Length: 173
Image (tube, rainbow, N blue to C red; front, side, top):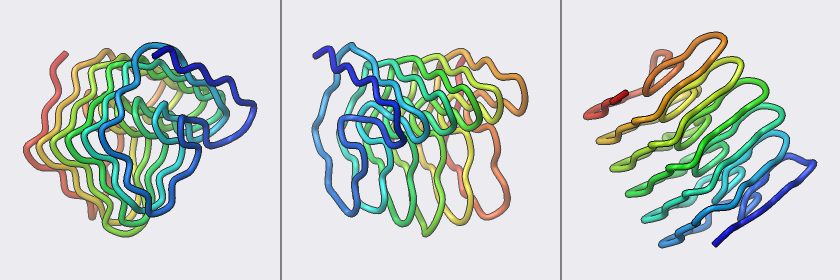
């Protein structure tokens, strides 16, 4: 309860960086997390590994780029499954997402998850995810938050380039 982190550095979260770790069954209630880039209340930067059955009700603020309602940034074969975020996401720069800001590298995936917090940033703002690169998949997820963005916004996904698969997902205003 009441997790409060005010970090003048990158990778801010309960776990700043995870590499191949399994994070399961964590519920964050209230509080706030603030950092520069790659900010998420549960994990700032997830490299491979698994986040499963987790919930964050914590607000985040990234003064730079990459802020997510659960995980700041995901890379290289990482998975988020049956997880959710309901806190607000505010990013000073680019890539803000209600659940995750950005996915890249390998075949990362998000499944059976949702985001219901409001999202605000300068560029690439999505109610669920801001954007990504390389191959990844999102399946059976939804978002339901207000998205406020100066440029390139989406109710669910702000920027989906070729090579990404999004199935069974929706957005509700």
